[in-house]
Amino acid sequence: MTWTRNVLRVNLTSRTCRKEPLNMEWAKLYLGQRGLATKYLAEEIDPKVDALSSDNKLIMATGPLTGTPASTGGRYSVITKSPLTGTVACSNSGGFIGAEMKFAGWDMIIFEGKASSPVYLYLENESAEILPADDLWGKTVWETDETLHNMHQDPLLRIATIGRPAEQGCLFAGIINDLHRAAGRSGVGTVMASKNLKAVAVRGTRGISNIKDPAAFMRAVKTGKEILAEGPVTGEGLPTYGTQVLMNVINEVGAMPTRNMREVQFEGAEKISGEAMHEPRESDGKPNLVTNAGCFSCTIACGRISTISKGHFTIENKPQYRGASGGLEYESAWALGSDTGVDDLDTLTYINFLCNEDGIDPITLGSTIAAAMEMFEKGIITLEDTGGVELNFGSSEALTQIAEMTMKGEGFGREIGLGSKRLCEKYGHPEFSMTVKGQEFPAYDPRGIQGMGLGYATSNRGACHLRAYTVASEVLAIPEKTDPLATDGKAALVIAFQDSAAAVDSSGLCAFSTFTWTLSDIAPQIAAACDGDWTEEKLMETGERIWNLERKFNMEAGITAEDDTLPQRLLKDAAKTGPAKGKVNHLDKMLPEYYQLRGWAADGTPTEKKLSGLSI
Ligand code: SF4
Image (tube, rainbow, N blue to C red):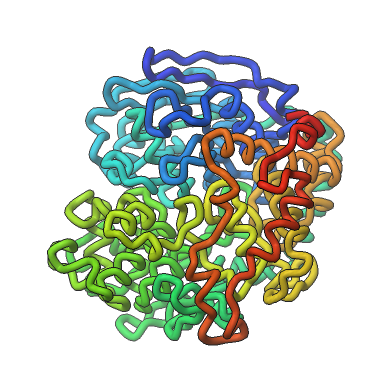
């Protein structure tokens, strides 16, 4: 085992909860979490369904190693159809709620239908209740968390909740658990809001008692932890600097998306880097970073806990921001910082707090504001549109005002809440939206890291770094170095990363463990814990199966090979500075080989032979 073998099915329309057995045939094929929940979703909904209709479903799913002592084994995912992209969505989060679900005895919770008024799910071991949440609707994540803890008088309750933007229809709202851990991307929080589901509160006291071979498992876990501790990134870089360890590195290789991806290097990168978070501030002599923090069972502890300078304009009248809270990750620092041209660490920390407090994806927020800034600069968007905000690149004040308006769903903030694709289309300039399949790019410009371009274009949830993190090889030499500016061999590299990431995302472990671990380190842990023969090869096959299933779902939803592309800016406008100077992304050289190596038809469709060979 370590599946609990229990699924909780929650029908919000009829307000009923039902326990059913986990489909173990599927578990053996799809492992858990991302893979297994995608199988349930694909079997249970029409891929063409309106993502915000009651016919869509929302699945919270753990992996078999979630809640075990394996390092980083605290992950859970939210799987649904995305309202932002129209693709399958899987958003992964850490913290503690995933482990709590397992301790309560559940592998998965499937939400279906729609409640007639706001509700929340209260889960205490076997007992599941759908309770009224009228008084919680309109509250932020932090207010909801505090209210539920007070109501239930249980400090150990683990809570995942949406904030106000999800309720107001912001298409990139996430679900925040444990105050600052996020299932952040693709609008999974917006789907939750569309079901009138405000929060899920979980308390589990049963622990994990069904490891297949406990002694072998603990040996594999111990070895795994030692390997992580010895790895330079997981043993030192991430604990010290968090993912922000990447800011200066990526800027130097000329892959730092800057000012709506017009440039590839940001002159202010150092000021907003992980190193800068350690330095004493001029204002009060204290550093931005208070401490690092870890999710359940994690020995890496990449999380940041930060403060904002006393007296900074963003928090003058806001007592809730004067303490410490979840600090900047590289993705939020980049999207809110270099992409908008803002290099003020306090401002970025404040907006990161806002994203946690109200539950939205900082990548899409920053990128959408950057697109709006470019249109403002060109006179396409005017002061009349922005409600008087001078939306200039580099303006901390403008960034702050627009971010606050987005959280409240006020004025121009409501338009930002639609994401950059819809915003730019509305103003007649879709070319300024830096998206794939409607989802904004993460922090690696594919002109400077060619493989990432192919990874973005073929990603099953729109632009995403977590679906195929070839940066590991192309920049960090993990597991071995490839040339970031070359295209040869990148199709195979992207496929290997896509399939292995799909397996890791289905296990309950954190993607960041793979800065050091390979599947040869992970397989013995899964094999000792779970029924079945979980070798490295079997995990790769499982990843390939998951990838093809997601692709099939998307194609049935109406996504085609024409959507496997990048914005013209990245294909036509050469990088102006850095090692990639003069380069565009050469997707055309990589994509046909990718389809061929995948065993798909030349138009990118998975063949019947491929699908049946994978038992899909
Ligand atoms: S590496 Fe970071 S994100 Fe991953 S489980 Fe550990 S603390 Fe959480």
